[in-house]
Amino acid sequence: MKLFGGFSLGTLIAVALSWSANHSILWAIIHGFCSWLYVIYYFLFK
Image 1: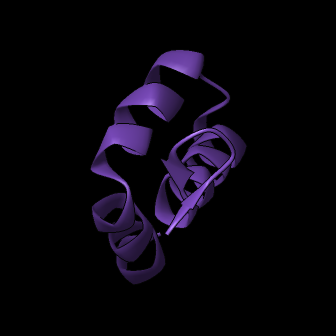
Image 2: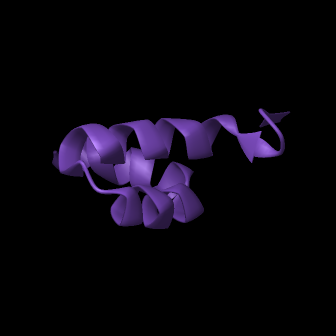
């Protein structure tokens, strides 16, 4: 499912979670590439 110019829902959630946790654009981009893997990691270990 692609939203907002080709970004998936998982990417948007990962970027939002990463930004709220780290306040870093670089980490948000890296976690955006990981998408659902980072989302799952965040909810299991944070």
